[in-house]
Image (cartoon, rainbow over all chains, first blue to last red; front, top):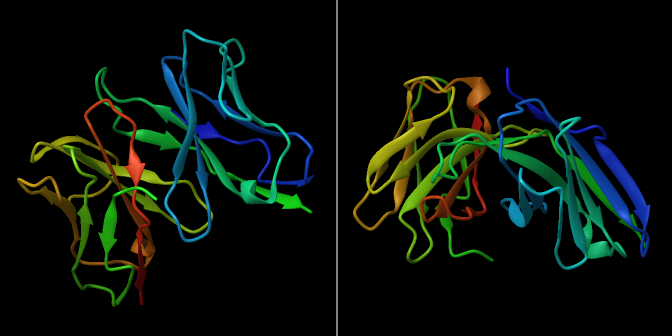
Length: 115
Length: 111
């Protein structure tokens, strides 16, 4: 079946270091991927997205890389800060074109930033 | 913070009971999606409502049902509650094909 999963369930980094969170997906037909951040007691918050016709997209301190050959997605956070501590999910969109419904989420990686 | 609100924040029910969870979408959004998030897991898609009609459904039994109202707010109803229904229930509002904005969720505990 289709699935989105993560390689590392937990990640601990020093403040100021760069963080890399990885994600594998299995549905080669998926054409849209999103990274979410979820802090304790809150709903997921959109970080960055990427479409399958791209292999890299940059935001503010974040970069998403997509490798369609090996069906792998990564989120890079530059100069990680304590406020980045959260659980990070990748999500795959398998809805109809024109709909962003039916997001398939991975299990999540907990990022802990040490001061 | 998004403009999506959910009520109640916490709820305790017993097996076999029924529950209704509510979601107010962000102003201007016409689409609401519901997700179930078990502890330590990612959210799982339950269904989506667009302009008061169901617009897609995940792998959940019929005892999970929903409604969307003319003001685009939404309800999730779960009948015959089971222990495994204990989870955080998230709603997300959007424009169709737009970015989803999540509410803080309702924590449901089934005893």
